[in-house]
Image (cartoon, rainbow, N blue to C red; front, side):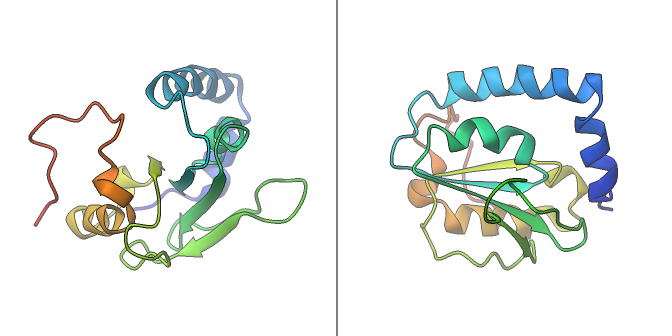
Length: 140
């Protein structure tokens, strides 16, 4: 069951939420040090992490599952957020270099089809710089 987007937003506005954001952004930078000319999609409530990635990547956008709700992002300027069906992402096959799932996978009621859909849109299966093991293969 999806958590309401307002509750998640309020968490990230708290002191604990800001600390989580800071620590996770450090890890994302270490995991993805180079994002120049790459496309990054944040799926779920990923906007607290996309702001830092937006400064380093070629294209960054956010997709929020319909069951969760959607909020405009970024606050200033044109919106880069879209409301999506988690099992039918509106992106072409192999069109994204990186996908970050935040408050998404743990709430999905259909995890395997959701991950298959993410795998579908990832160029190269998302393998570069992901520190994946040999067991990280498409589900299904």
